[in-house]
Length: 261
Image 1 (cartoon, rainbow, N blue to C red):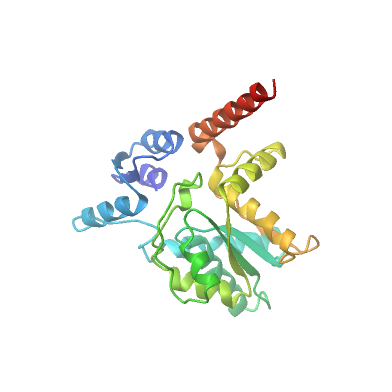
Image 2: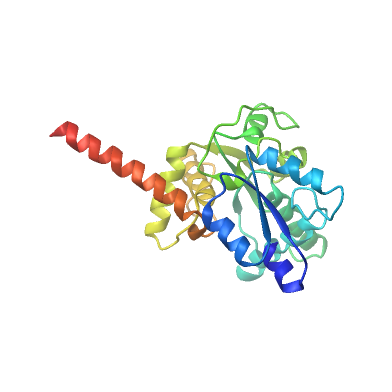
């Protein structure tokens, strides 16, 4: 949003949680936007943004009706890059669920246009420490459940109250997909594995790759299936958080080594 505003010459103020990774904040500031850090959770930040929106235009992807019309183009890109075919499965990290809803709109438009016959299964992945959609899906509920959110390294999807949660749940169900949750350890292990494959992604993206492993292990997805895993963020944006995790792991390893000695 800051980049688009910079290109268009529009004044921009971005509200972020106080704990947001430095790499993300620096990038926003370099585009010339004003950054306002809000103490507390993402929900506190959202509340502050809505209050300010009483006197200016609010471009939040969670509330703005135009945003999903942009996100839907990811469905067109997937279809095009797979040679005008759709995959069997799509795996996405989910907080508010805009990727799920964007895919739903895009693939529905392709189907309505007669370009595709089927709809890919959508698998939504949440962090176990913040999984209102997962808990609702497991209980067969139509609305997200109220949770006590815990800290997660997947900061980009740490949303306890998905605004369009009921639509996200119904979209996943209608696609014959499911909502799963992965633990912090699974996210970190997946982040390391994917990095060694040459993809330096942020922990929020590692949610999706951890989800892929879980789904294959459960037999929900076959290794022979055509599966697209959407990686939503580059690792440099979260390098400070990744470095902290690395230091903690190294400290634990050294402590274990000393115990053995």
